[in-house]
Image 1 (cartoon, rainbow, N blue to C red):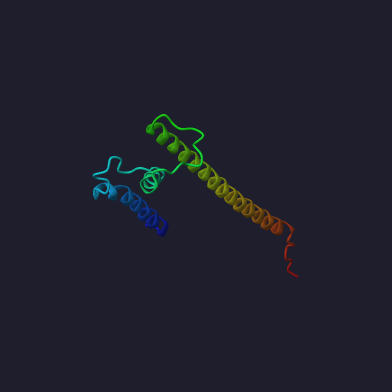
Image 2: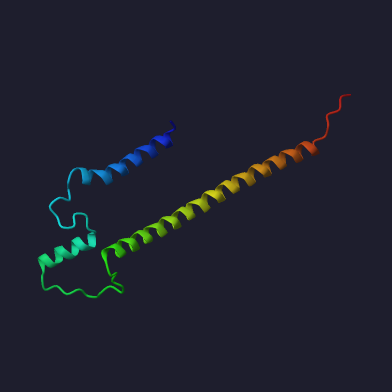
Length: 123
């Protein structure tokens, strides 16, 4: 197994552990919504500390349900991942194309040198 394969396997196991451990350890038990987002947790903490707090502004669009909100968030994450994957793919393709062009130029240069080289004549 190559070094990169070992690192990728280790990272995959780490991500899987981060997803499974909270569920296996029961970190969300006893809560109405055990794994809410940071926005909802911040909102509940603010209302506990200052019940008369008024937000400065309201959202431009409020999804009708939590499921739609989650779907929009997943769509946003998928689009971001797609943009990043496209960028890295284009970057790698350009690098590979430049390496191939350089190899072809070197091969053509070597071929020209052989064609233009004068044959050695023995006296």
